[in-house]
Length: 162
Image (cartoon, rainbow, N blue to C red; front, side, top):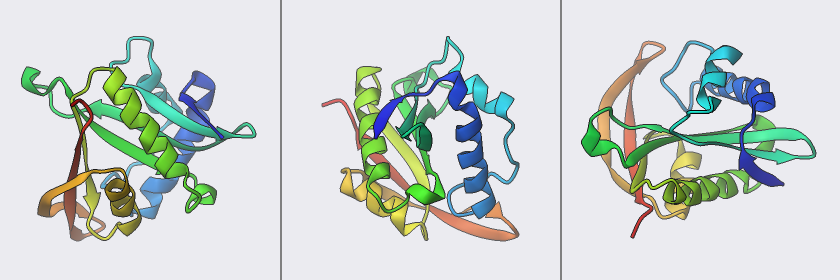
């Protein structure tokens, strides 16, 4: 398996994996499926945030990306992350490899800290973050409404610069 920066030809696979994650309702509050054109904007030449893919035998098995945490200048060195795997790729250590590489890339790109919000019931994502040294900061209760239900999220963070 290879982990690399995403390219334009990866957009259909990234979009399909993301849309499957949206439809599953276990990893994001998003409910609107994304179009390839929207995902393609993540890869523009002037992109300030990296997108990585895990590829094996020509198939994209997952992706991870950094994105803006908040627009204020004081937060410029903090990034939020997302990671999604193809359903066929879960439980094989691919998420560990992909997120590990994203943390390395975050450091090289000059980010100080990365963070995310994870549904409290998403034990796989929480275990992955714990394995890679993320700290669970706390829980936002009833943080968002998904399919008519208020859901809690746990905040995770990791310093990538010493």
